Length: 131
Image 1 (cartoon, rainbow, N blue to C red):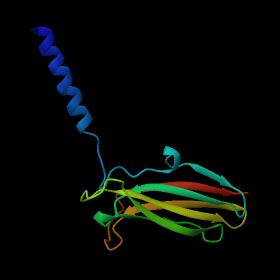
Image 2 (image 1 turned 90 degrees about the horizontal axis):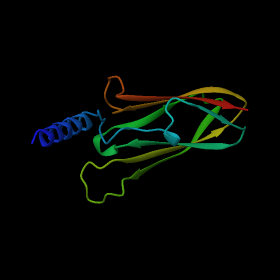
Image 3 (image 1 turned 45 degrees about the vertical axis):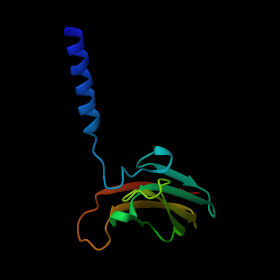
């Protein structure tokens, strides 16, 4: 009986611990290949993509800031989750950039509602080195 009580106590503790993981609206925003705040090296004229989890149904979206002389954005696509007919289901935003000239650019993404004048709820910062 005592071992059953111990097993139940441990199970409840694990359940509570797992349910305490913080989440932003639409899930936890991510970054390419699971690397947060990393360095990206590319050749001049090459393109690269960054995909971040997003939930446009909540009004939140990722907005990039970068040195427009070093890189430029060539495409932005939102792909909804494969869960059909689920209210509030998130998706991913994929940004495609092209390297223009040799140099370094900080690429900062802010996850916020564009019409609100508050700090973003999430940021991702990458260093892009164009060689």
